[in-house]
Length: 262
Image 1 (cartoon, helix red, strand yellow):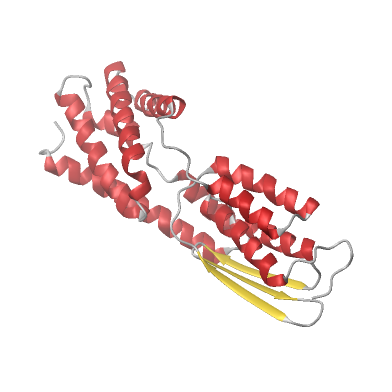
Image 2 (spheres, helix red, strand yellow):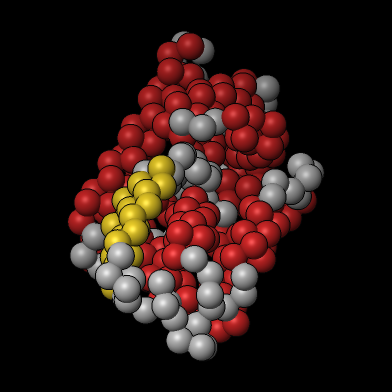
C-alpha cells in the first residue's frame, strides 16, 4: 500500500490489528458503538488512504479496508463478556487522540493498550466502598426507610462490596453473576433485620437493590438506538432486562429461602 510522506509506512494488516485492539478495549470498557467505530476509522485513516468500513455489535467487530492500491483487507474480532470501566475508557480515548495526531509505530500502540488494560493489583478502595454505603443508605431513606434501615443497608452494602471484590473477576456471565449476588444480598438484608440492625426488610432491600441496577447498560442501549445502531441497542437492552430479571429473581429466591418477609 502506497502512502503519502506524512503517512506511516506501517503495513495495513498491522494498522488494522492495532485499530481492532483499540476498538475491542473501548467496547469492553463500556464505550458506545458510535465512538468505537469512529475511533477505528480514524486510526486507519490516519495511517493511510482508501475506504474504511466498520461494523460493530457487542460481541463482534468487522473491519474492512480498501487501500489506495485497490487491495481489500478484512479482519474480524470476537469480543468476550466484559465489565464496564470508565477510568480505562477515558485513558483509551486519550490514547486514540494521541495515535491520530502522532501516528506512533504499531508496537508502541499495542504496548500502551496493554499497559492500560493490565489488571491492577487487587486492593480494597475505601472511596468505592464509601460510595456503596452512601448509595444504599440514601435510597433506603429516600423511599421511606428509617435511620436503622439506612444503617442496615449500609452494612449490607459493605458486605456486597467485599463479595464483588472477591468474586466479580470470575463472573464472566453477568446475568448469572447478577443472580448470585442478588441471592446473597437478599439473604443479608433479611439477616440484618433479624439481627436487630434494621426494622423493615423491604426498605433495606430497596436500598441494596439499587447497587445492582444495570443503569449504564440501559442508557447506552437507548443512546445506541438514538444514534441509529438499532441492533446493538436492542442487544444492550435485552442484556439489561435479563440482568434486571436475574436481580429480581435473586431477591425472590432469598425471600423464599428464609420464609418470606418478616
